[in-house]
Picture 1 (cartoon, rainbow, N blue to C red):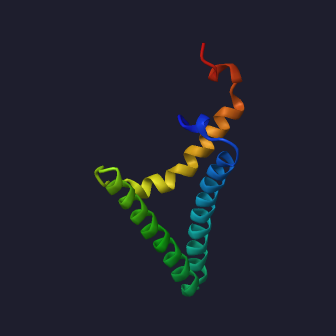
Picture 2: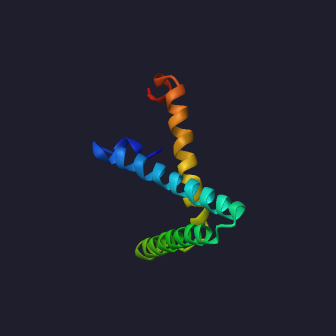
Length: 107
C-alpha cells in the first residue's frame, strides 16, 4: 500500500480489521445463501440476501457522496472494489511477510 506508511498507531489495526470484517461478511453471506438453498431454508436465504443488499446500498451511497465531494465521476466498480479489497489486503500481507525487509527500503 502506498499510504500504509502514513498510518500511525491504531489506524493500522483498524484498517486491517475493517478489511477482514468485510471478507468475513462476504464469506458468511455466501455460505448462508448456499446452505439455505441446499437445505430449502428460504428465510435464511432471504435474510442473508437482504443484509448483503443493505450493505451494498450503503457502500454505493458512501462512494457516491465521496465522489460528489471530490467532484469525481461515479463508477460501477464499487462492487468489485468491495469484493477484491480484502483479497488485495491478504495478498499484500502475505507478500510482506514472505519478503526480505531490505527490498522495501529505498536507497
